[in-house]
Length: 355
Ligand SMILES: NC(=O)c1ccc[n+]([C@@H]2O[C@H](COP(=O)([O-])OP(=O)(O)OC[C@H]3O[C@@H](n4cnc5c(N)ncnc54)[C@H](OP(=O)(O)O)[C@@H]3O)[C@@H](O)[C@H]2O)c1
Image (tube, rainbow, N blue to C red; front, side, top):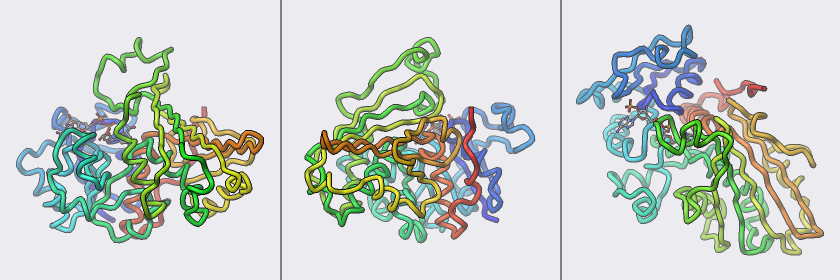
């Protein structure tokens, strides 16, 4: 049994971590922090936890770090900039750290400062961080002390592109023309639990809009992920455009590419099926069947459909996931399983909720 702490337990990814870790046979949640709800039982704020967990939120102030250092693993389900203040002391004490925010995702300090508008608190430690996408970095995760859990959009984009970028002997630039368009939609829980005008019921329901059209902070993360798959810089341009859709959970990314003659000669359905044949959490749909977001709701599964049209030289990859599970807390638990040598699907292998 390992001892876990969740920093930021009142947020949407925090409550998902409580839900998943409470059912995990090898984990005890020993500390759950909140500054605003210290002293309150978690099941008072989230009645869904009644009968599941009797843990109380703590704000330990100056003692927080000393208490976190007694745990085996600390999850930071906090805004960007929080984990990097404590990760150095924790990892030095041998505690494994999984940050759901962006502090340890981007290896380029220039990109981090540009997109997150702050300087990095521990650039040397950042170099040791592993990007927490098990389907890409499983071997590195097994020995990792510090993990940057991926963003939700990048998880769909990188796994949607992996069989194309990496799988074909890293010949992607020969197989597709020079631009990839990622058209992505997220439910409103992607923005977290804090109140904001744009997330008001009257503003977000029965409404549909693009945002960050001029540039989104997940683009450099997608580009970094693609470059890692290729082991070098990828010269093709990626256009990424996110949208907010009126649903609570769920994410759908449509990835569009133009095929070259060499690319059109490949059977991409088969290539995707081969690439993910042994992955528990990545499901390639049968040809002509397209996944919807409710087919993954509240689960750690990500489903992919591949549509190839050689008359138009087009390849479209459609990816769905639950942004709070495979896009955040579930992926964090999957990473923890790999880091501690547990079965990778432990505590995660349950069916999505329908309807
Ligand atoms: N929502 C998603 O779909 C999603 C997907 C992937 C990644 N992420 C990332 O995961 C992280 C958490 O997201 P979320 O949606 O769960 O956010 P959220 O709902 O806004 O919750 C944030 C949590 O952090 C705590 N917190 C805020 N400032 C803090 C500070 N300075 N020190 C310590 N705790 C602090 C808050 O509690 P108190 O104020 O009570 O302390 C709250 O529990 C974010 O970095 C987000 O970008 C989210």
